[in-house]
Length: 178
Image 1 (cartoon, rainbow, N blue to C red):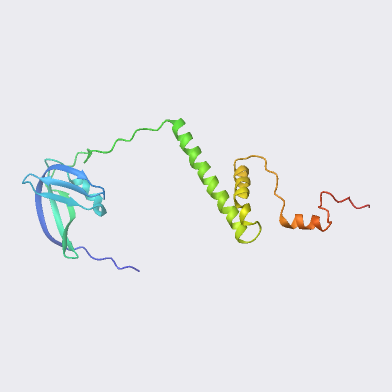
Image 2 (tube, helix red, strand yellow):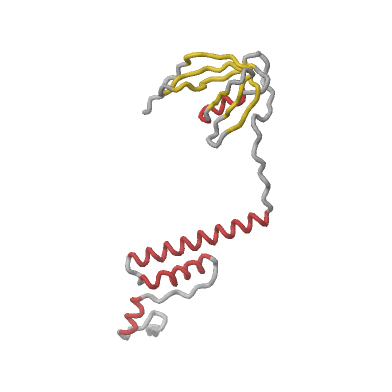
């Protein structure tokens, strides 16, 4: 069982949040206080982000990990409840129309079918069921099958060899007399 390190607060600081700067590419929240100091709360402690509200006092608890100080706790200090509002500007996502999704899904599906078909054909070549020069035509047959098209079964080398020896396939044999 993994032993979890106990977090030890080494100091506290009470600051008034001047503004929330940004959430960076790593998901860390950066903000500045009214004295012009910059602060950062790591994305591992995103639960603390809600305490960072402009023009509000916040009590920050600092801990040390690998000789580096970080904000380990944050709580409102002015005694007023937090008002829910967004902390940082969120990236606006443009909704994709249904027909665009259908087109994208179709392209993705086709790509997956082609990859799957090629992988299946390569596996058949690895075990000697088909020759290496038959990989691409076999992959095309697999792909047609996945698309729901009617596919004529490919004749195996064993059937061809048997016919050369004069053997008849099950379809060509005469039914036995009873």
